[in-house]
Length: 136
Length: 147
Image (cartoon, rainbow over all chains, first blue to last red; front, side, top):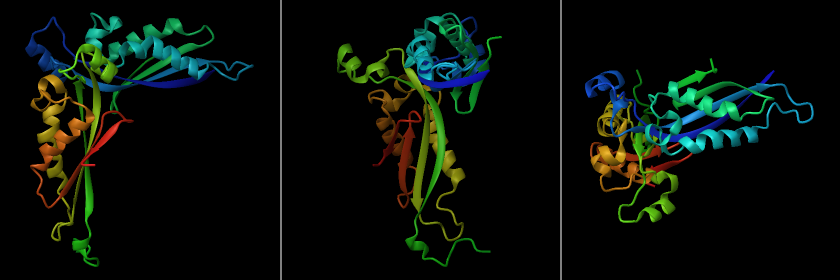
């Protein structure tokens, strides 16, 4: 098995705010991330797929094709967007990177060919904060 | 103890010191004097009405002659406190268009943000020091002021 990773990036606004709570509760839990007028980040997304190298091409999966799938299924939906307002797959969910990485997995997994398996997603919100998701 | 290097003429030796800080903010590029179509054509996806955002990285450069008594050009703790007070507390986790006085009327491009930050810091740093700011909007896009 060989693991291949493609890195993509997107810039987006969001806020962490639970509408079922009072303003004070949101401020207490989410602090400045609860700012009602949003804030934003440069997100970095690492997509790792695994498979056996194809004997004819030597590829686990063509990295260019992987990039195209990530761009079509994820980046076009989130780049220069407001994650709370503009992104259908985040509707009704809390807009944390934990939930975002799960949402991205659900967007990507059905569009990969049977010859490879989505292994891991790593999502950076800042250079110092990131989450990993393995689909379980 | 040698505090400053006196074997060279310190009056001829300026040194640049840098402080790096960061803030995360939402913004939108929009000219209210233009119609929607023109805004979209010029600013593209940066014109999204519900905003987008960045991790901004700020590099503040102060140039001067190291003080003979301390060996410092500028106390970095004081510089850090100044950047926190004047810049980070204003812009971090804010919507630049909606939450900041500086961009009520001014388009929050990286160019304008850098010029505003320069103005905020320049008034608090002695004229004997040269000041320059570099602002990264993304890892790949950054601006410097003054140029």
